[in-house]
Length: 126
Image (cartoon, rainbow, N blue to C red):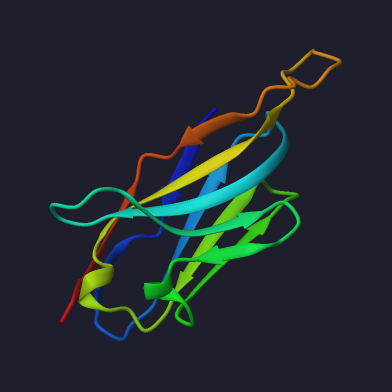
């Protein structure tokens, strides 16, 4: 299962970026899609998540500025980032957890699986 994050880049403080996360069609159901950030010299931290039902979570530092969304039909996830700050700089990783249905199999794998994308770099200049 592949997750492909894209949309990062260089932006001035106050600007906006929209990250996208594409994944394969092997999913039966993606229970949760999440975005994590790893800044320079820091550990990877959770930024936002969204469940299959649309419930969202945001870390305090991005509330009111970032919006997480998903397109269940397309197995896509998005992170709209507005009013970007220098401290938002980092590599953003998408994460997906859910149930798989392998091609040719009549049943859904009952175990929840978790996968990570390769990361996309966001640099916010002050």
